[in-house]
Amino acid sequence: MQANSRIPASAQTGIHEHLDLLLERHCRSPFLKPYSDYNRAAFAASFERRERVAPEAPLILDSCCGVGESSVALALAWPEHYVIGVDQSAARLGRNTRGRTGLPQRPANLDLVRADLVDYWRLMRDADIRLARHYLLYPNPWPKIGHLARRWHGHAVFPTMLELGGELECRSNWWIYIEEFCFAVNRLTQRDAVCQPYTPESALTPFERKYLNSGHALYRTLISL
Image 1 (cartoon, rainbow, N blue to C red):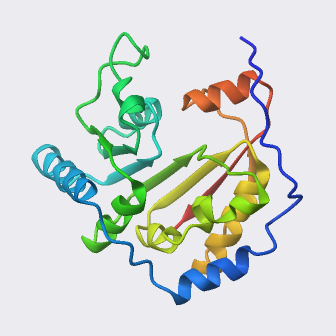
Image 2 (image 1 turned 120 degrees about the horizontal axis):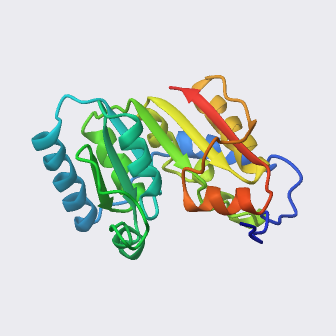
């Protein structure tokens, strides 16, 4: 099946010239935005569920999971792990039901959580929770030059996210996003991070499927934190 999704259009031709200065600013100034009560409650409830189901299982986080198709796939692929998929949209998460997305019944080692990751990541860090694996699959690229701070690697919460550790994987159909992501990881952690062309055996998310059907080149980075 063919699709007609567009590759992100941007005036940028490489890594944003202000990314290094932005990362330096984030390192100098801790991110102190107050937590919302809703995110506190969502975080607490999700880890209470984990405690009941698999308190000792290694933890996988699927950030920006959308309808949760990737979260289901990860839970099936890693049955000895506990997978938490987080998205801020109740509408997207609500589509994760048999018969609406065509997904299999939700695995027992999976929890889907509605929360803002800006708070959720910080609450995990405050609780000293560490990840085995962390996925950021096709986040909004915010390709306009003036939108750098809206990209995850340009956001003030990015240093906190890196503190969660684990094997971090980010995928995009915009190579500049992955190049910048790698630059930011290396700048903040001195860990090796490389942008690689990538062709999956099967699509892990609806966006990945759409991009493949549109003939897009895909890119990813795998980083051990």
